Image (cartoon, rainbow, N blue to C red):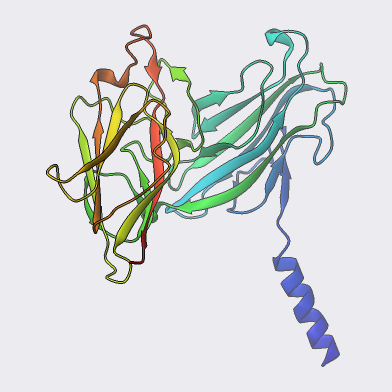
Length: 289
């Protein structure tokens, strides 16, 4: 009996271990299909060495409904005395370049998401300037169920789910007030008409709908939140730029969002070739009376 118990405990312990990954020259050869683990630079949990080369790793969704999410808890790269001498990270969604870390970048809580069923690649470019003092980066790996994401305008009776603008949550899953001359993954479309979303509770014991925003950036577009299910109901407030609504709870059984979009999603204070990187994401749930 003791032998069987030992085997069972060993198996349970093994399942609880999350795998670690490191970027390497040429990557691991085959993309990793996983929803768990931690990604490190080529120095692992310690500082990375002063090498020259490009180190990569690719993670792909295990199923067509999974969105692979990389959450960088820390990024601290070598700064070699000028932009041309700095090491940097680039993120690719499929084969599309999404983001490259700026010069002298030190940050945390940078989140990047793949497409549903797709892949995300981290490329770490090193020029040999690091003397072992830079810790590099660390990112946790997880997956989001694409079926829980609501991105199309319409009316929904629900007490659970993740809401996003029409661009979905692909690309940047964290605050990024940057600009791009191309339509990057996750951008919402360049509409000139508003998009309306109404959420009503489906639980009589929890009738008050709550929207909890975890990401908000719409440049010079705006959203209006209405306490009810139509334009005749009271307006709670209007928000624009990166001024997040935070958490909003209805006093009735519904909340309505009217997302107003200006032409081309372009900030009027920037030149015409610069397109903003806007995005909205929040959770929907209901509260008791």
